[in-house]
Length: 294
Image (cartoon, rainbow, N blue to C red; front, top):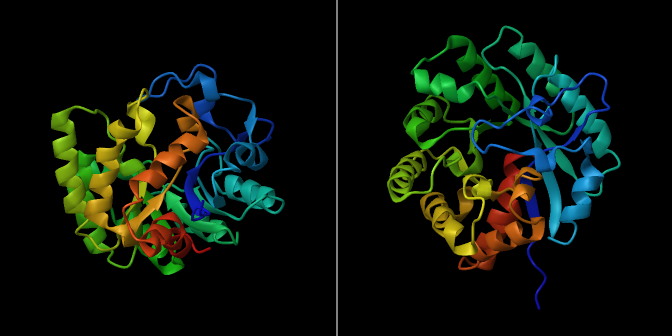
């Protein structure tokens, strides 16, 4: 039996409610997720890097990318500093996709402060999709995106299919910006009509050469998924973006609501198994290594 190709898991979340400054509002006892509903099963006091490794260590993981999780904190740079310190004793390397309100007056300063961490590799801003939906081209936001390009870091983008057209235009305005679409566009439904609309939008988005697809979070609105129910979603992404512009993510521990780490990552390995060894290597690790500056 051959040794599986190592994976860089490009989407994980960590927290520790004992931290005196950080907050995770989406994990508060009374919070109901607006899309996936009740997530009480993952609302532990803490979930740090060693806890994650306990669940992921048999899945052939060689590194992690942490994506902003301390939502509601006074200063998002605090999360970057906390994670940077934690990673010093971590079991495998880690990079950080930090939080920053890119259209805010303080954005430039926060981006500079994030960049003081050697692990800083990008930004996710939940204000992005509402801006895309509005059709607005905000000068301050555009300036921040140019700064991300200059920093050579990733813009991790949450964007459902109705706003992918606007995302294409954003990608055209910033052709050297590394953009990664999260969670295959976070499908809100699994019916045939939604799949057709989503598939068309994904293929249009793939025409922007600076956009990469993150194959992650697929179980979130298909909680009783099977390997086959997820397969067609993964295959559209792989066909549209090709092996040179796809990366993998576990969305851990959110997707623990639906299955185990090994099962989900094992299914993903199966979806890419028809590609050559070098193409699988690109999807599993090489693309992520380049994008997230490992």
